[in-house]
Length: 566
Image (cartoon, rainbow, N blue to C red; front, side):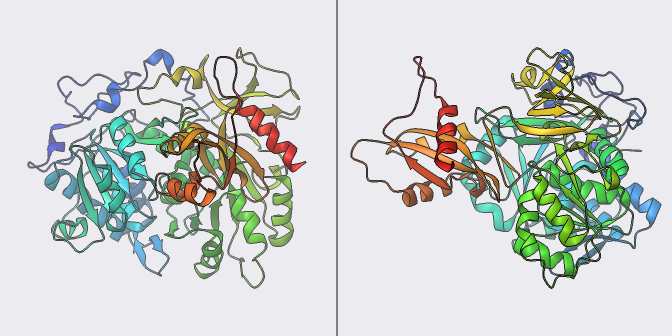
């Protein structure tokens, strides 16, 4: 695969056979990188902190030089032809693979020739789930840059933190999502809008470009994306994934468990800013030559009619959505649906059985993590055991260990440890050594391994709240609460909820004389955090439980919530 050969393009310097001066080898030493901007490589954890990677059969193997954008788009066009449908939108629009490749190539030319993006630059992507957002992501891949896709609902303070941590200099943003990004006031950030009416809109710049764009000759082990996930301390963690990682999730979970065909139509609720959505709604269908329906509004009330209208055959969503749709199934023809995937939170057995009784479809349960990109324990068809998560996906290994990393006997709960072709590599974060121990990735979940090899979810092992598939860090919400001038103390915990798995509950101590109400605090939170992070319940306290050293005892608040519900 050759790099882009335009003499006016910065990527021309990144020839696969020439080492860029000053660019270090990848930690594996497998191939010389094409990145001119080596920030991502320079901020990978030291090799001794990496997890052990399983790169032999049955894990997939890849050549040293690999550009995942080229593989997912150009190779797929070569295999299946340019005329097959690739991207569908909720309004009925359809992009063929040929049209998608032409648009992606034009965007990539704008990136490199108009905007000055060079291989290794981080490019922030923001907007609703649309074909244009997907095309921008693929263009960033082909240009050899590093994609940082964020939620359209992210607030200015959240965006500023991410841009600072990843040192982002370029952003491609849907014009409808531009306000918060502008308010973030990131120094040196060049924002290019798409879908607007300005003369510098990306759609108009792309119209002036023609001809194919040959993907930059990146190494398989070069960073392709940084996915941010909230940590238990509230400081987001950047998870760096390589070009081969993005293919590995398609060639393990999708190939062996999901088993899609080129005739499938994918759809779902997770946005492309979540790796669950990136895999399920873009990487997996493109790898299979299938098409994907990208919905801007993908709540259960929108998802169900879309499944019918577009004859969706493969669905990705969280247990909350399955539970909600159960009460709305009457009159909806789901005969085209053949695969239902659930992840993001634990799938209750009752939900699995109710969906099966109503539709005859067996939900494929799975557990994944942003740190590991996608699902690594699952089961499909006759191998499914309701109430169990499943078994390790081919190419992956899992075990249950104690706090010292020693494997526990079957039937005894402990920490889930995983390893496979993808592993955790945080962006310059000391929490790397918390997640990776003894060569294994510790996901922060408590599991039991049954004698027959199936893994059963027990609970989260930390203070993370998982609500409707979203990971929410209590301390991050507390920090936003404490920015209110009349909030003296705050503690945030999760409360069990039948529909959402958990809801966010805020325990608040107000300043003396304050007359703040739950509604006024709710308005403050909505102005500072994405909606899914905002507390649904406010409990006003005179004081919060703390240790003698002043450490907040959140577990006591969780126990009080259980007593209240008993």
